[in-house]
Length: 79
Image (cartoon, rainbow, N blue to C red; front, side, top):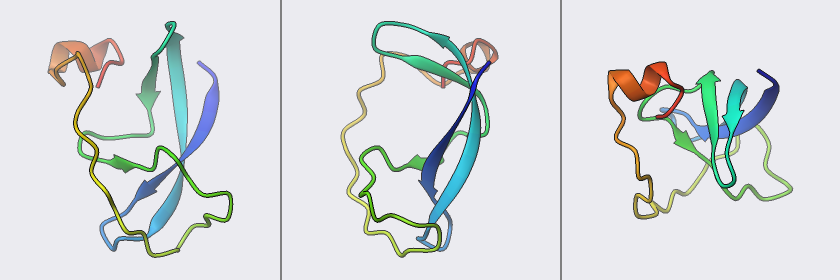
């Protein structure tokens, strides 16, 4: 799959740039094959000035996934 980068909030509450490997793409979803773990907090609307190491204030959005994170779905790249 192709590679991309995303920002996540690390355990210290700071932005961290992470490289991920993408899998299949649907009309609204793209599977992530590697680079993220269950529980990682991905920054979905990063500010253009965001840099690694910046302190992040998190706002948790309601879960919208139709898929449950199960070992079977993880093996398919659905988390």
